[in-house]
Amino acid sequence: MIKSAQLPKTYDIVTFGDTCVDLILRDNDVAPQFGQAEKIVAGYDLEMGGSGCIFAAQAAKLGLKVAILGRVGDDAFGQLIIDTLYAAGVDTRYIAVDRELRTGVTVHLVQGDDRAMLTHFGALNTLRPADVSDEILSSARHLHYGSLYLHTGLLPHWIDILNRAKRQGLTISLDTNWDPEERWDYDLQRAFPLLDVLLPNAQEALYLSGERDFASAVAALRGRVPLLVVKCDVDGALAWRDGSEFSQSVQPAADGGDGIGAGDSFGAGFLAGWLDGLSIEECLAIGCFCGRAVAGASGGLAGQPLRAGIPALQPTPVQVSLAES
Image (tube, rainbow, N blue to C red):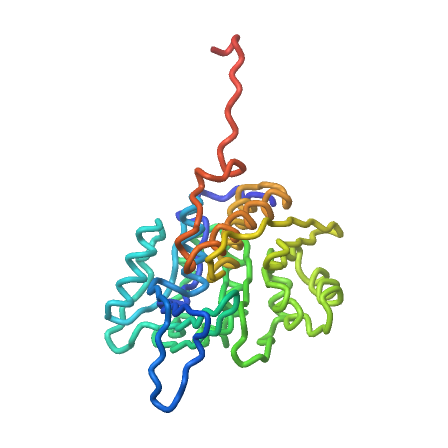
């Protein structure tokens, strides 16, 4: 990518937090039994969740300066989210605490290599266009728009947000995540020309394109955005830019992981390389490294790698000749 010649920015990335906690229940059989039957499960975790929040934490751990906008309730879950993001290095000054709301919760029922999710929005979807000021946008190099369909307070105005970001000189990436209403639209055709990177998984690519098979979906989407990156789970990732195709395989993740947040950490890793001006091949490799690390752990945070553990993100040593020394 071409780096801007503007004055230094406060942040590398600004993003929106789908602020919730994840309650993760695990067993070989986690299907509830109604009729007031009590069922015992083998284990659980309680931690920060939300695609945007997990993305922000991983990006910050990779050395990027990240600000996140969001809202939480005035409760223990909200404090857990703020504390977790702050510990990861994310600037949390734009997360508002609302005493009238409860923090969002997602219950994950994890069974083998599959899971089901139940979500209560709470404060998760209460961001409004006024929260996304031009001042905040102008402080960043890049806008990462995740969980498009969950941010219902922003959704009617999201094209305007993209346009304002472009006017402020930001590059933009979009990871829509799943659409609970399965409409898969909301002015996408107007959004595509404003994007620099589109980051769906393979299933989302089908729905976003309106096509019935993967090859047709890719053909449709790659013609609409400058850089299409598709997450393919255990098969790694693919990317298309300027008529070229790139691929990255991935080794199986460690046993015992649940896959929560792997795609979000992939996106953070890919963009860390992209914003650093690395090649698409290097960006894919970094993204897959991050995604695999998270997929092999429990929850979306435990496996997230640090910048120091990724050679491609280390500064190139300056060669000094004897004549200069």
